[in-house]
Length: 131
Image (cartoon, rainbow, N blue to C red; front, side, top):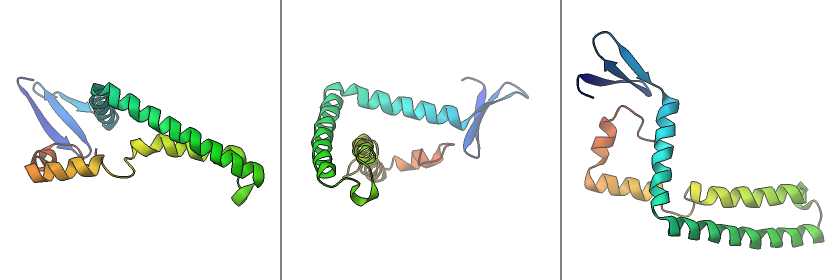
């Protein structure tokens, strides 16, 4: 990027590509890049990722069997149908590791970046720290 300057513009960034020419980098592209980087980071540990998916699937099946037994004994338990309850189970299992429920995830990584001082670099970047 020789001869280019980058400056922050709200939640997006712009890159000056020569005199009088500015190329914008939209927020959508930024989020896509961050998501791709996160995917690569988790894809590095394929065995760990596969073990996590397997574990979530097994616990999901256990919950499905439990919920099916409950709904067979008491249909429309809590005002929900069996299909809605099973959807709740699978959405919960899918979001479990995505949202890092139960620890880990962003909080642990963020605390480590504060301890090492790397958060100062994050704050200097032209994107929101929460991305």
